[in-house]
Length: 109
Image 1 (cartoon, helix red, strand yellow):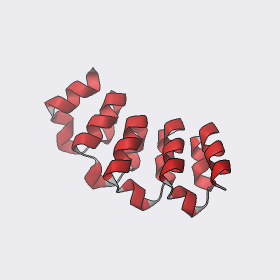
Image 2 (cartoon, one colour):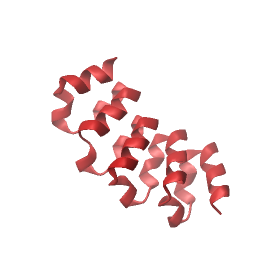
Image 3 (cartoon, one colour):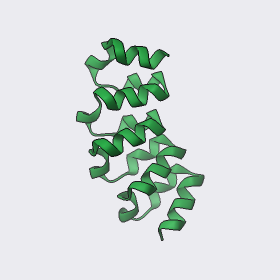
Image 4 (cartoon, one colour):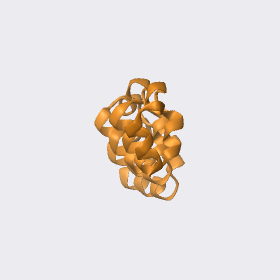
């Protein structure tokens, strides 16, 4: 039941690990989990980890989600969204972005 899973991930984002596969593919459920604990992104369905719009939403909630997104998305505006939350997001950024002036300024301000 979606309401039960939403309640569980609202308390502990890592509870997503134990949810049914259809819940791990549900945008609302995964976003609620990531809001509580960004590292819960690792339990999300693969298609969500590759969906730029979803990844932007997730990384704007928690920079930790960036660690688990598809490699091609660890660039540009996704990193900016994560860096705006925490400069630590640069740790998960694609190599060239760690030297990008706009990204670094976003991370440190």
